[in-house]
Amino acid sequence: MARNILITGATAGFGKSIAERFATEGWNLILVGRRAERLKAISAELGKKVAVLPVTLDVRRRKAVEQAFTELPEKFKAIDILVNNAGLAAGLGPAQSADLDDWDAMVDTNIKGLMYMTRAILPGMVARNSGHIVNIGSISGSWPYEGGNVYGGTKAFVAQFSRNLRPDLSGTAIRVTNIKPGIAETEFSLVRFKGDTVKAKAVYQGCQPLTAEDIAEIVFWVTHLPAHVNVNDLEVMPVCQSWAGYKIHRE
Image 1 (tube, helix red, strand yellow):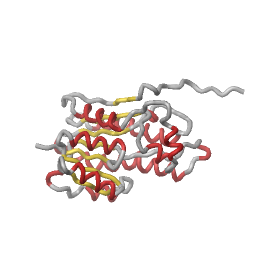
Image 2 (tube, one colour):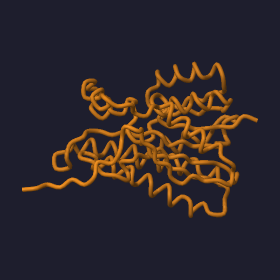
Image 3 (spheres, helix red, strand yellow):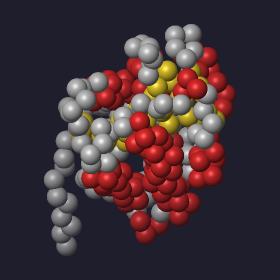
Image 4 (cartoon, rainbow, N blue to C red):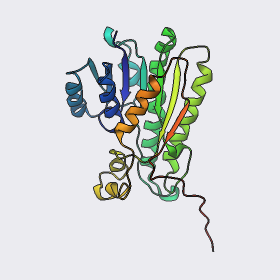
């Protein structure tokens, strides 16, 4: 019997690659994204291999999220894996001059969107006593950097929320994993710099960053471990990336 995976932010980057990886193993896909045309194209392509349900949805809209998953088609009702992948970084300025609209966008998507999706899907998992929630966090939730202010704060929330789900779900068979990638070449920087391709490309110059396929393979691995094994946190960086040490301002 085919199993179901729901992926948010499925129109590009990690989400798209995760969908492609699971499709190779015959999983039914529930693909959530805001960009309807791109979602339609991806769904049509993957639909040649597996059953696909595209859901055009902005995870920041609480009521829309609640309504979207109340009446799923029978084939897709039992969601085995939820991948909370939708997220973004906006801007790289210091806190004292950052754009508050950017801060709101990150909080609304990275925190609230993840909360709304989890709350919508988790009761069904509990009722079936089966499921796995995979949250896509970031090393930015653990390690600070200049301009990472609110983005890092939102990913720290993802880490702590993931941890706190585990005791809430104690006694059930439901697993929770927070995956924390380092630098990865996707549309991430293009979004952060609001379409500035020069700035976006400069982020990855001179190093070999992670790829979306790398993260997809990690998601596949953690969700296919024996049922009694729960990977709580998984932090991954490319070899070219490491910690820079403490910053000291000297007069």
